[in-house]
Image (cartoon, rainbow, N blue to C red; front, side):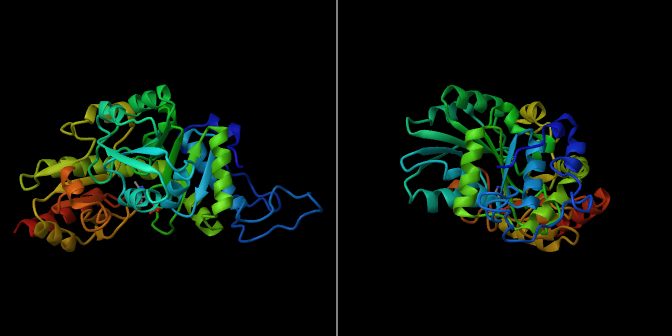
Length: 391
Ligand SMILES: *Cc1c(COP(=O)(O)O)cnc(C)c1O
């Protein structure tokens, strides 16, 4: 099991991002962690080895990534996975048939699909609640409930859940509190500080930040949970390869810098969109008009680059996503390049229509992942695409 280097936790965020979990290579002094592209390790003798036996169980490049992201979240242990959904899959495998999970209703579409189409068949129970209202969450707890799983802000409606309030609820009811922190990243929000037992990430998104790998990570400070997840990592084997770990680790070095730019551009573009009379609604927690802006200010140190806008119809949404030139029309988010997506037919196509529409995820909703290009260029691109859509 990998544990953070304690001395790394003494530094500020940007310093941890660059250095945490990594030490110069002992053989060569290489400043960057080598890509240990190996499946096995030669042992010194019976029961004598250097801590590495087989690469499903442990890999030094993976160790470095696990320590790095754990330190960024302020946790003690990181456990890496082949994708964000593999991380969620492992988290759900902490439970047993008969257990019940209370999940935020606006979670990532793939999370919802994994729960209702895979784990429900294996005997876990699930309910989906509007996690904006902690009273609703508390009322939905049953004697079988073992876990509360939330995303904040949510994808794509940018709804928030009160981390402190849900942390308190899970503490008094002895429930596992899990937060998908993919959107906010530890740069802007650290759920462990509010009582979350587990924080999960799709490292595919902001943590890697360069749209060139798929991966997941879970962070915890709980020794027992870390032990169990490490067991599952080895027992089920949904591990990332060393090359992908190395790419993610190269990404996290610039996380602080990138997030500052995503946040600055996100704020400017959201404000610019909001003053346009032709945009019906702008969903961005950094806007004073966002119904949970005050909570966002309390638990987040920035608002990032994810913005959703309501254009009013499928036809307008289609024209807009097909008219942008800098914003590429693609799934995913969190890279240095700007993307535009249509949640109803892309990320959330597997969520039942009634459930989508009940939370405002209409056919006219378009989601932006604002990259780190020049903000003026991005605004000009959006301007021409919106004008085309409104014609
Ligand atoms: C992408 C994403 C996931 C799933 O991660 P993968 O790496 O694609 O498996 C989970 N949660 C959120 C919020 C995401 O954006």
